[in-house]
Image 1 (spheres, rainbow, N blue to C red):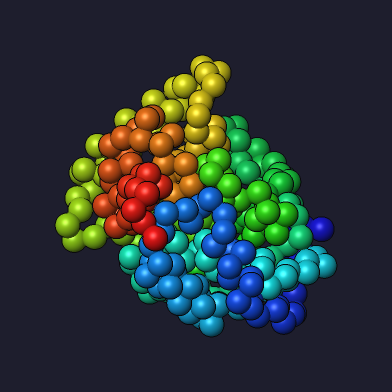
Image 2: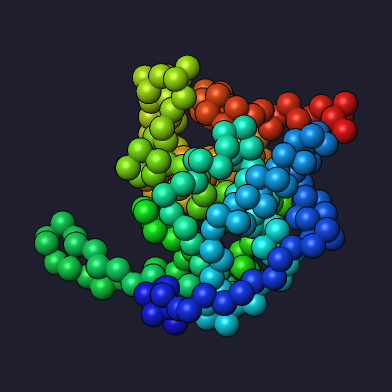
Length: 257
């Protein structure tokens, strides 16, 4: 079943997470090292997101309370120090049971239009819904650099200035020139390595575009930061300043409690 066939399905109620669901959501490696006050703030922010967004299961998806808590908690992590206003301007999270098909038209260099069928685990529409695969949710946040929720919500942050180009709206104490000086050569290097067939610690999908580079590296920033620091330390520093968090510090600070 395609995305367009089910996108406007009638919303169905989703279960509200219970105490045990939140405990399960925060038990994955993604949240390791967070201090107790940050975990409390994270749950408060996640609950605010649940109140602000409509969750719509389609194609026979049956999310559990633990699924809903996991999505909200992961979505809240990038904006833990930024606030819920960064996710304003859209209202719906569509949930598929597994990967879904997105039908699209693509024009090649000869001007010929091709009907394409893309299999997706998630998708974010500018001004529209965010779509997630529940199956891919189960493989997220395991400390391997993959989290479908963080990836798609990073695209929403990227869209904050109206474009989807790997450059989200920066804080007043950040400069576009510094961001570009870190990201542009890193993206060029990564594309060269992928095109050359090199094995990369970072998912090769990041080479698709600057927008995907930003989204994938945001996954690594939160879920496997050491890989990003080793590959592109200047990019890590820009993301640290943007998200106002330092996952390397919390992952390796045993004094956190």
